Length: 177
Image (tube, rainbow, N blue to C red):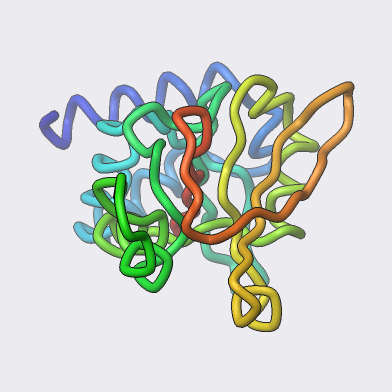
């Protein structure tokens, strides 16, 4: 996807979902993206893997926050274990990669629990899938990892072995611009 096509796609989504980014003007978004080819490349990777990135607000430093806003966990980022350590620990039936490795290669970060809950306030996401989220070091040290989804009108955070992977579990990314 060329930059112009990507920008048109992002603008159309930005215009379609104004509730996700109240008080943010497209002109500011476009200007920031023009100054950040790395961010544009990350957004292209998010889009190409089914993430449907959109602006969801600003961080404490005033940077724009883009997040995967696809209704379900992005199709191109499922069936992954949590991290490289988990991937290496699998004896057989290894997935192609891990969520943390794929996110790093794309130039994005996984959402943490607080970010995931705030994101879910913008709509209903992951009603049939789930998404890996940043796992606290103490949980990861015990072999676990966290994932989250929305069921029964609520957001749930669960645990699983970090080396597990499922066709319905992927990850959502966040990019600061």
